[in-house]
Length: 145
Image (cartoon, rainbow, N blue to C red; front, side, top):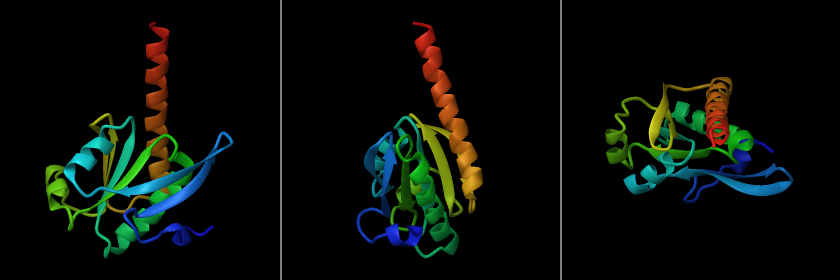
């Protein structure tokens, strides 16, 4: 299936179906429209939020890359996007000055900020490292009990 064919106009930037351990899940690239929703997503175990605009060519390419990543990581990472023109308050609080900007959060804390168009390989490596860190912290907590 082509990535373009899974993009659709609705409340969500994109929705795909993935299979994980034999179960099918619908995974969405969430569109965050207020600061409360933004905080909820940022406080998840692990999330990647893209700040951009719909008219920017690099932002459109970045969203296609994010949808590609959702197919591999969507069961463990929340993916979301913020339109900085529609929601300047969120962009201002996060000190966004360039689009696209991607921020990886863990439980409300910023882990990594990436400015400009990022390749699938770069994001895959960062997310894999974040997932490994998450897994090792869970193992450490389990071994101390």
